Length: 165
Image 1 (cartoon, rainbow, N blue to C red):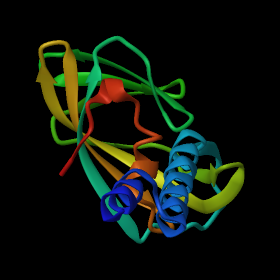
Image 2: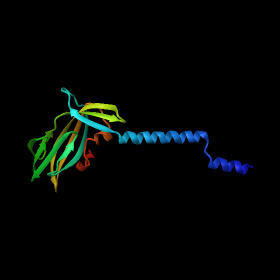
Image 3: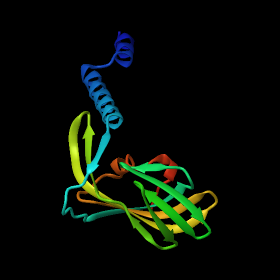
Image 4: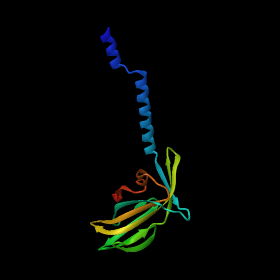
């Protein structure tokens, strides 16, 4: 008889174990849904914003191909150590070491349709030179509130090959 009871205990789960597995599964499902429903809406910034938090990335922009960061459209064309940066229709010639500040924006981050973070941000690009068909930059993202990198990554397109510095 002891053998029968032992085999039933090994194949059947106790109520506590089933509840624990159910809770773990629910947490995993909610976490996956939160990641899948993470959205960042980018609007015009409010006047007088301050940016105490800074994150820096090494990025590359493909020469001659438009890239969108937040709601800003950027197109770069490089020649030797000079570059023409067209940001939202405003062109500027840059040389190595020169910065281009992109107009401040406001980001509204939601998860599962619920607002999580509202913050202003500003992006500064420092031209580092060209490599092949890419223009290399140090990109500084300044925010009004501390924002997790997972959220910042939503603003940066994968074609920029952003690497935290």
